[in-house]
Image (tube, rainbow, N blue to C red; front, side):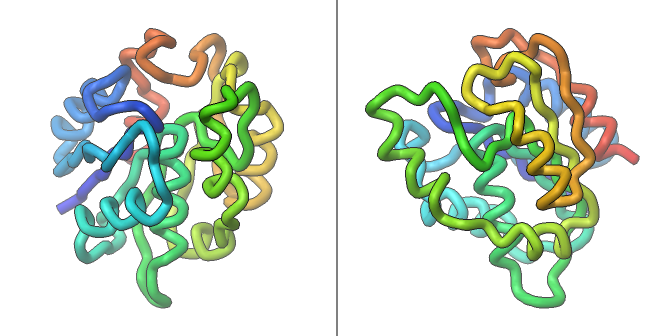
Amino acid sequence: MKRVFIVHGWGGNPDEAWMPWLDRELTAAGFAVTRLVMPHPDEPTIDDWVGALAAAVGTPDTDTHFVGHSIGCQTVMRYIASLPEGTNVGRSVLVAPWFGLMNLEEDERPVAKPWIETPIDTDQVRRRASAIRAIFSDDDPVVPVDNVGLYRERLGAQTVVLHGKGHFSEDSGVKELPEASDFLVQ
């Protein structure tokens, strides 16, 4: 059975913004959908978040797909990079993904620092995921626009830049994201 794991972002939860809509769309298309509740979302750590995703997934295969939002994208990439040789997964949708951030508040910097400074083996991610789509907004207040090219270059991701979607969060008012569901339901 095709499975999809949705990983929310920093300070977020699986019931915000477009995630419930995506769950309904993918369930209707025959996917088993898991919207994860990540540990301590206001102070996410790499080990705890990647560990939570690994525990939820169990044994991955090419019918295992992922959707991440913001730091959830970091979690998905780091999880995929950690998979043993010969383990491949299906498609990944990365919504508002980043390698670097801008406009962080002073108290956010210590939380973001390990995520920004700990390298991701993007070659491993590229080899293990069957396809990757990275979805950006042209007015994201925290994801610099140069991330679009970085995702194309480092991950071979198909990139989509939407207009006026902010950070794709509850505050941005994004309640549907067909660019995510269309990529997974192919």
